[in-house]
Length: 143
Image (cartoon, rainbow, N blue to C red; front, side):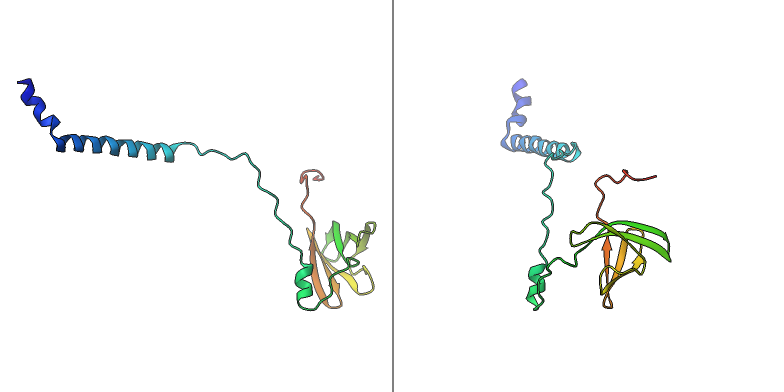
């Protein structure tokens, strides 16, 4: 009697069906483990973005590269109200100075607008916005 009850279990189709069921359960468990496991966090910091040299593009259309004498760096903004304000700027690496609203930076450049985080310069009718650089410690000077 025990031989007759084991006979259907060792048939090739039954063994193949059982093996495929075990394999299917194993694959489902592996994918469940993959999707439900906590993702691993990479500890490597990404490289800083590469700055693009715009002087090559300016020379492409026949313009002369900027010599840096009119390079304006915004160091601070003093915005009291829309009609009264000033900016702390450094021009071409010179020491910083305070320029009032509608004040002249040089012969052809004036400070036309002071915003919360930027200024607008008017250079012979062409307006250019200069923003404050990102602070290394944003909570350093907050009152």
